[in-house]
Length: 268
Image (cartoon, rainbow, N blue to C red; front, side, top):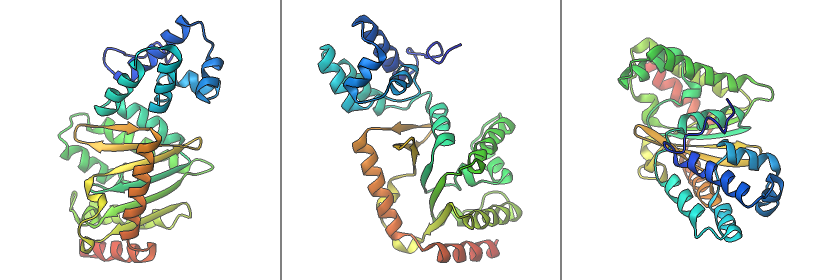
């Protein structure tokens, strides 16, 4: 089954955007290359838009509505798709994560999945009340293989101090997890920094997020209860890049962060 055949426009607004884009292009007897020329995209990007592998940006929706005289149809669809939780969020997020050349993560609650030990991951899944624990842990461990590919992605991680201080599982679990953080932080492509509690209020308190750079383009995954959403519009991405930089200004340097992680680990 092709990616297009797998689209579910009745269950996902983003899938509906993809289906409507292809239908309208074919109705106007326009080739994928011709549409790409209008949007300043290559043919493969148009194909990904129509198969759900890439999300339509608002600036492109405006161009399409103007070109096809569709009475703001695509702008409205993109607006509502961006506003709600995407049922396909994890699939799309995972696909982008494994292809990303750069990842910037700000986390308020948990050690990020890419850095979790199996024991820590199991505790977080159990704590979430999920029944399919083994399969969820296996998926999380599988995601970590992206850190081992050649070339490996560059990874910048910033954690609230509460993340490393919050007990998850027993002493053995936390010591193993914090030790894992220290090991990963020694890799040349991975930076782990801590934002100490003493900094007080800052923009990062609004929530956790991840910026993924794929083929030179950025997308932001924004965490939310029972799901999440992806932001790909340039204005949204710029805002989150700015927020990441602001949080970075409050974080400890790499060496001081490692010292704090070591101190917390010894207290468990």
